[in-house]
Image (cartoon, rainbow, N blue to C red; front, side, top):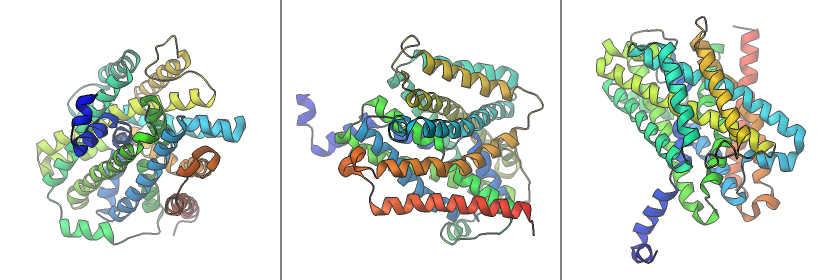
Length: 416
């Protein structure tokens, strides 16, 4: 302790940041899951660079939404489900958990589909690879402490840098990409709107809010350390969408340029081979594997955390199976469902992947409304309630998703 106090102030801050690092970066990186990679790839292949401006604005929204949940976790020492139950009652808690489970089940299945797709690129059968990875995920969480599991998750985060390299290898038109990053382009057709909702739905998801708050509680981060955690949350939001930017750019520079239609992230990886080199295909596949494995683990944990917190059952990675049987039972059940559905031969993986993101986007406003009410309650948050800026950003996200969903319904029913 005395040695720590003798260190220069800047060095102490770096060590504190490294000590608390984990929840923000892991949650944000897990956001680029199989469904997300597929959605970004389809966005780039279908519309070139046109959706990059949306990604730029969504990054700001993601940072604000994640910071809100992280702040609630640090101030209250409770998960989001706990706070919903305590402040809204059992009926609203059941409603929130229903929304979360619907969205998360699609996401978990999509992530196991991503694991299967990445294995197939390397010639590994899904009927071998899926049971193997399901077992690895289950064993890692069941037998590891929070610290060990967090390190494993951080390791999987590194796999996403593969997309940055593949983006450069695609040799995009940087001037066009930068112009579309800051100049909005919008089309009033159902396909564009559906993909746009998917991009929002895969960037800001219901499960992320429950997971980051629970992981901050599990790690024991308090208000005193929160200024460092806040930096990590904001950095994580930037990092995940920096990677997303390169996924869209790589697809736009190759698939859109040559008019290649894709349905899955696997299609995107395979198509990159002849267009940008075999190494680009390998990088894309490795990124898909790392992202899918990370998110399959995180989303199953998020679901278990949320449901156990909602009904007052014991939860947490630092507890063993005897101490938290329902927590680990739910975790095991969701892994079996996710892995089992993907092994069904007739399942269309692309439908599951894209649908998972669209369901997330449509259901997200409900969770954000709960969050906004809670974080503006001075009885809960004290002086740490939202600023006007945060309320405006979060309110705009809710309003935009509702408007886009209504436009989607209208354009689907009455196509031009």
